[in-house]
Structures are given as C-alpha cells and as structure tokens.
Amino acid sequence: MGDLILNYRACGAECREDWLRMLAHDNGLPLKAVQQLAEELGERDFGELVRLCDCGGSLAS
Image (cartoon, rainbow, N blue to C red; front, side, top):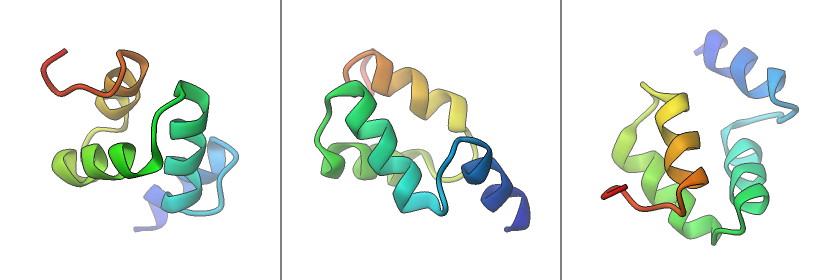
C-alpha cells in the first residue's frame, strides 16, 4: 500500500480520492464516472485509467 501512496503523492495528491478528483477535473469528467472506472480497473493500472480519462472516460475506447 505504501507504493500506491507514493504514486498518488508523486502526482500531487494526498490520497486516492484526491488523485481521482484531480484526474476528473483535468479531463472535464464527472468524479463519479472516474471513480467507477477506477473501481472496474482496480489498483493495477494507473496508466490505463489516465488513458481512458484522456479519451473521454469510455471503456470502449
């Protein structure tokens, strides 16, 4: 879990929820949509979550 916290802090967030909030805001997406994507992807792939958000938040992208 410590590595995840370091990843969030490296992005300027204090925790997962802060990071998701920032990701949603930066991409103009609703926080709830980003939270749902994060839940579906789990903690395994930060890059994929960022890519999906950059593409508008669709898993079909």
